[in-house]
Length: 282
Ligand code: AMP
Image (cartoon, rainbow, N blue to C red; front, side, top):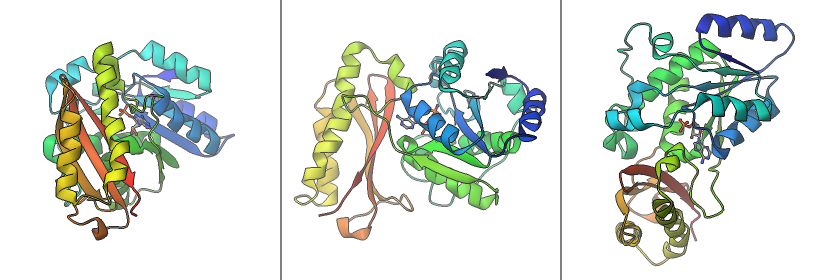
């Protein structure tokens, strides 16, 4: 496996490989890799001759400078992990390589980015769209892999690809969790042992809440889930929304959609965690 830092070197390697192989799979990440990322990588390795993983902490998608500064980074550890699973190419560019000039593009996702993460992290999805479209332009993948952990991001990427008419397939992959139920996240690295135990309560309550949908109307349900999670000292729910999984808009009755998803953001101390759950209706 080789790690490339410039677009030119990456392109040379891709064209060399493309002469004998077909199918480029791409997994964009911000590094601090865990089994969630690796599940995407393994799917790409299964479906493509060439798999490229990018490791780039994108400054334009952070609305909180402290969060960007403290984001865990360890390219050597990431490269080792990717080598072990058989990745051909790692692309770890500098900020200048991705943005030789400032990216001033403004994307319009209609109502998709006005809710949840989009509402609470202004500019976040515009930054995501900037970096992902730039990476797609560089890598030119046939398939790109994203996790359902970032449920809204996946919807935004699908919309981006449609809008830009890009000739590639977006593959969504299920959330990988610890045995405790906690959704794997690079940000978990910043939790203390105590906080990590507390954070388990997020997925525990979401799972338990599947039993409550018969009894509670959506507004009461949202309150019940939020209150239950907030009972744990270090946890504070920023939002919990029940949405139509197709368009991410809030629903007010369980019958309003055939694809009901609960999306949550919770502060555990100062670390912000997200998770989601699909509700099968009775
Ligand atoms: P990130 O490095 O956080 O930008 O994530 C890179 C990709 O990995 C995104 O498509 C995420 O949705 C995906 N991902 C992160 N955590 C998980 C997880 N626990 N399970 C599945 N996919 C994940």
